[in-house]
Image 1: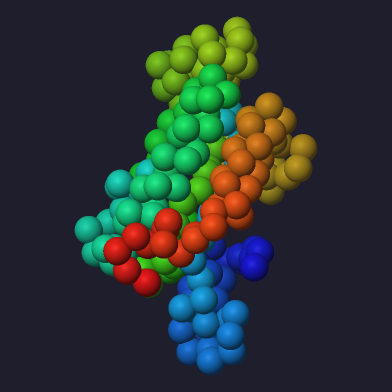
Image 2: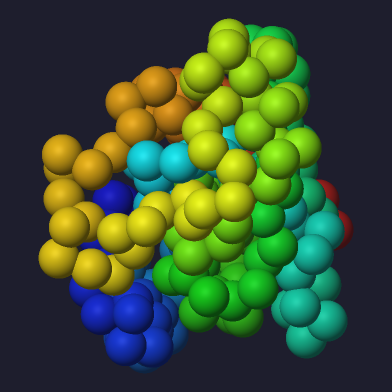
Length: 193
């Protein structure tokens, strides 16, 4: 199932509503127990991008334990793809600020990518990205990843095509890997579910 959420900025309303509906559903395919994973791609086209991987190891202490192993495995899949492609990457804390949060709180493995929002690109990041991608492709240090985050200028004309393309390819790789896994449930939840 592919889902697009609304009202994230108002408190994860769309994802939260969806999870509540799934918890109460008895329809096969729509029950929360039918979900194996939530892949979250929030802000993957930020103009002053980072290639950010949600780090499952940083999930909140109250995250159900059955979701941790798989979430960490998803982090490793993304990391390994970026390494294989000789691309820079950064880890992003799993802080609960995006639509993966209601799923993770219910014990559903979660992972994904983000090109950054209101954080500031560091000089070290810029230099590392320039070194790996080519001079001038690392962005601008000292400014937000997405100066138009939550503003009217946040449009399709305001994305970094290079960063966006790398993020889409990483997402496709992970999705294909998971689709080819013979026993995805056991791979994601080796001890439970």
